[in-house]
Length: 559
Image (tube, rainbow, N blue to C red; front, side):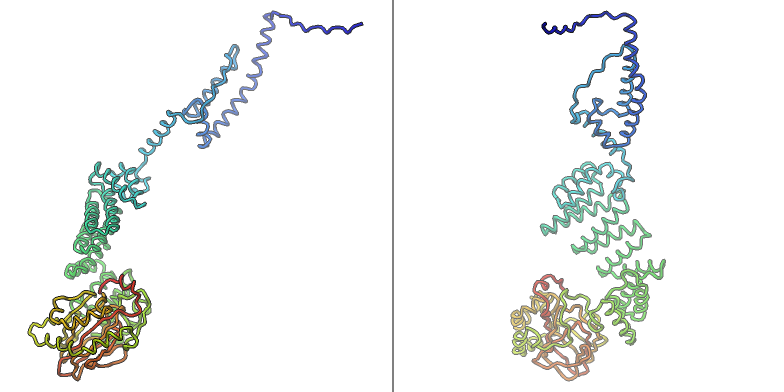
């Protein structure tokens, strides 16, 4: 018997009846309606999470076919579609086409529009530079900030172009005017150009006087402007800057103080005195005003009693600016001149303790950065200048004769000492070199002496010294004092030395000899008397202190 053949599976079309269709419909619609509420609840929860997470929101916005529509709209649309699928006879769901995750141009434009809209809605108080920005500049803040960034990067050409763009829209923009001035100042420094510096100052001044400048920006502008004006040597313009600020803010004492300093720098003691008195009328304990008015009374009026009183009261306040070597120096000097030597010594010791002086006896104020050997008296062997000293000593009679020839003339050219160092007597000088520069007019009257001096570069190049004839007549007393700097050694060549003159440096007293040098460090306290009956004539030659490096000598400002 053979294997029975498997019977083929035959499908028989059966026409559904009305009853079977209803049952099938019922079965198909049951499942969605049963779980739909659960599905919508989960979707709502997920949407809430998404709406509170900016990163996730952005990612989904990029992926959704809804583009940049809010996710709330997307959720409502999804719920609507789900609801429409739950009823009988719903349309089959069509899968969406794949979406390019890169934002469309419309999306980018929408995002940029939103950003620009937010930027426009920024309130001035929320702007990080609001304290220096007025209403008009606030509208141009984007360009101004870009220009400021370039200036900070020292891209001055780019910064100036952007500031000029702003100024074409608003020619009175204080931020643009000041920023351009700062840029020009950097260029002036780079190119060492006074013309550019003048343009920088002009632009800053225009910024200062522009309308509606915020107080904080005014403060910044005035500080920089006055500093650059002073640097340029325009002290009168610096005074005008502080006068403008003082008038604009009459209750601001700081501006009045700065105006006072400008007047003192100009030598206008009358205006300085008036401002200081006005400040003290309102506040008699203002330390700044006390020390500065005391300084004027002591140095200009020679009123040592009242000057020392005000200086002492001002220093005792310990206010900022009162602990200064100049005020301690003049207070001690004032006490000494009214015979209160105990108080004078006390002030000098305190100044040394505070580091205002090198020591109680070495009280120079304009000193070298390098630590220098300090001794009151030097010998030629202790200096590297022995050969120069010997050469001048060898020719001392030639030098003497030229000096005496000037004394014999009615208009010899000797000028009185003007530093108020004399208690009494007649003490004059005839200058050949000063601050490292030759006085050609005077050297033509003493050609042999200047020809000799031209061979001494460490003296003729000394920008903190002098070379001069000094004549002292009988009866002179020079107050104890110190020179302004420790950067030099002062050599005295005796030319005509009668009986009677003598000099004390620190605690040792000596006299001069004809044809010989004595060498002192005049940053130490020294005092001179002439109790004789004839004039004393010497040649003073200042040399660089040998400890100062050559590079530092080049950088020291002249005195």
